[in-house]
Image (cartoon, rainbow, N blue to C red):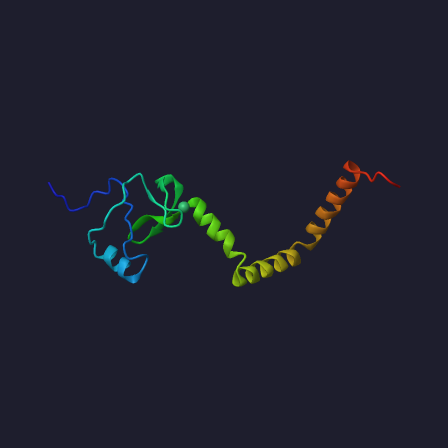
Length: 127
Ligand SMILES: [Zn+2]
């Protein structure tokens, strides 16, 4: 009976004591022992609440699947906040400009439809 293959019975969700750093990646590569969070959840880095694994986005890497260090709602909040930073706003502006250039006619038609509907549904009282 050969037992060459490692059993991958369940995913592990390692805590990252060093953060997602080269040191951490090296440790994972070498299979060093890691402090494991309980399999069904962990503490969020931002809000500090314990949340079940389903509240974290998984991250697939070569060495396995991990949970992000922030829970979904914190990750979303961080994502939203990014669009208010200088770089984020520049990217957003560029995307909007390009989107408008590519869909100019659709956008104009949609705006005209919206205006027509507003006029129909909210006619001016005074005339
Ligand atoms: Zn959180």
